[in-house]
Length: 276
Image (cartoon, rainbow, N blue to C red; front, side, top):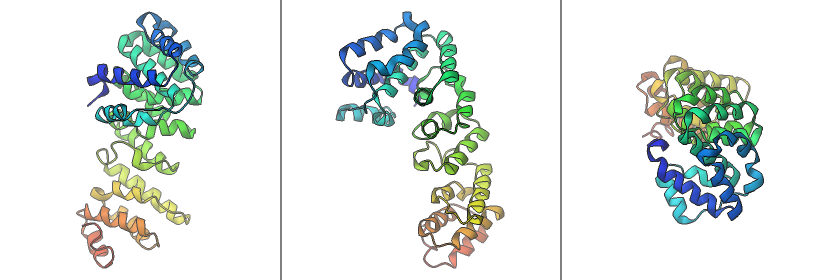
């Protein structure tokens, strides 16, 4: 379910969490900043917000946690208060008046420092007219700032929902290259594709040639697309001594119809049943 489909309840939940994590004066200031009459001051409010809310990690009740999980936004409970409040501010103004707020948000992207950029990319799933931000998200993947990349790649449902295949593949490859937490990328298996599998197998071969390890998670994205090219990389992986990688390869082969790979792994007793 898209956040826009349940905006009212999600907005109420975010406000509830924010209220429990801020002084009353800061909370009242934030609500005023989020009102329709303050939309032209969005940039100013966004920049100065941490001075009002502080930057502490969020404290959430069990009920708030359960509500966040039910709404599909459990990841927000690991944020800081300023990050959540900034996302709420952008979201409420976006849904209040997309035509006025979106050029202002675009300007914030252009001028953002690191923490501001993290909040901006974190806000993408919470903004109205989500297709507006596809190009901005794709451009963000080029960032060399770790925390900014994490805000795009990890626990963010926006990229898998809206990026085209080329941009999505770039995101996944860069996530492996920069050693991000692959398990936190939304939609990996849904967005798996042949071109990505081929690119990742080439990347794996480069790693092997340099004497470096390959993240076992890479192979889960190749299974349905194993062909001669990918199989050559797999054989290299099976000749190293990484048990976790061997098991990941076996699982990938179990999802493949490529007969040579199935025959090859059947000759390795400890792996021939690993993918079953």
